[in-house]
Image 1 (cartoon, rainbow, N blue to C red):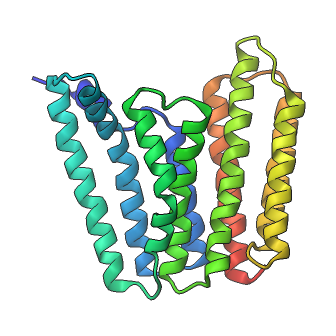
Image 2 (tube, rainbow, N blue to C red; image 1 turned 90 degrees about the horizontal axis):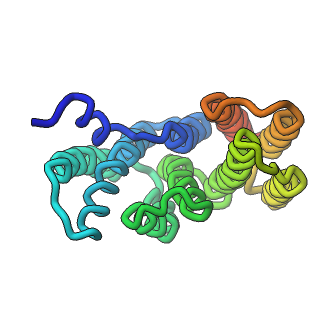
Length: 261
């Protein structure tokens, strides 16, 4: 019989960073365009996050041609969470005022790559982590499109999140290397951040990204530079700091999109 601990290890995400990459798009989307559709898609996104762990376990066991007691538990939770996600999306079809599903279609390549990496236990590679984070960012655009926001501005929200995600993942990896006594490659990390600023600024110049979104990425870069100049900190501190900074990016960008800034 499965213990409470073993069930928890199957039913709940083991990587806390996934919560940030999931909640930030929801918060951003709801601040930019608050609707019932947005809440439904937000519930669906959280269900997808919860489903990733059991789906990974099931797919890994299938790839390795084995079926364990844990596999049955994981399959049950995958079906449960998947049903909640489907219910959220179906509810959004009832209340939407715009074609929110285009955001999910655009996210399919990223999601498929992340799922394949999960199945082959390669989910901690840079490309796999980035693909998964970018795929989850589509939630903000889906919420905005479902509320009737214009396509350029809706996808501009995703652009800000993608820039933030790539910069955050690169920084977190550098911080972990420092913690283990390795080289942080500060110049390369900051170059990625400057690239993120350039990309988001280009989106703002075309009218797709709120100016507040550019300001958020600039602040993100400043915090990253400051953290790299300080002594290494524990991995948990890196994670909580990144979640706080990500929340700042989501709130500032969402407020800017809603206020026209």
